[in-house]
Length: 209
Ligand SMILES: CC(C)(COP(=O)(O)OP(=O)(O)OC[C@H]1O[C@@H](n2cnc3c(N)ncnc32)[C@H](O)[C@@H]1OP(=O)(O)O)[C@@H](O)C(=O)NCCC(=O)NCCS
Image (cartoon, rainbow, N blue to C red; front, side):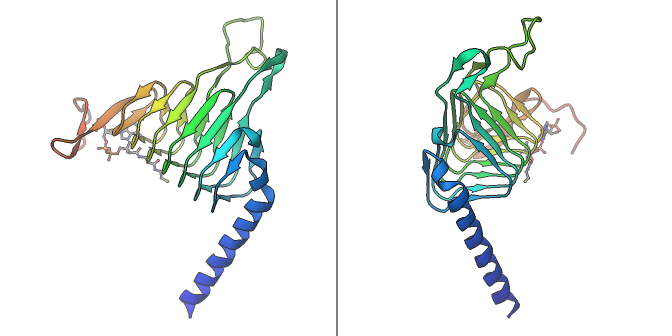
């Protein structure tokens, strides 16, 4: 009896989320696939520059912006492409003025940021917020996992099946099948297809067993 009631409640929950998503979000994107769920209090700007695949799950408090113009009259043609089966947890901040791609099956855990814009600070007569922004595209491969509180910086490319450690600041180009961690993030493990093992890429200096 208890199990049946639980199943009924989760069915009702998913149904209401689906209806909410359909009413509040679906028509706002260039493309939005089947079975896409959005949590509460999300801010989406420029949805007509965003494409979302099927079976995606988005948590609460997302801020996803496709920027088409900036102070001083600059004009941009942004593109955000999110593949199938992507899961993005709560408090995600994404700003795009050029291109951000997130591959099929990738998970972005809580409190992460992904942005392809740079606020130049070099001209000291200008508030960095008001300087003309620069852009560098971002590509995140398939089946990646981005650990909590991490930031993916402009110009970053992650291969397929990359794992980013919690609290990492990721900048640069990283191949398939690696574990990247730290701030700045470095490759700490790579998958070795000869031994079928994840191998450390450095000499450990800690005294952990
Ligand atoms: C990066 C990660 C995947 C590595 O896991 P692992 O392979 O089991 O790593 P190990 O415990 O063998 O650690 C390997 C080394 O990396 C270091 N390391 C691990 N995670 C790290 C991180 N997030 N930042 C910096 N260094 C890290 C360890 O201290 C260790 O260093 P040492 O060799 O000098 O002792 C894991 O630590 C991690 O951060 N996962 C993300 C967790 C997360 O955010 N989950 C979301 C839950 S919803």
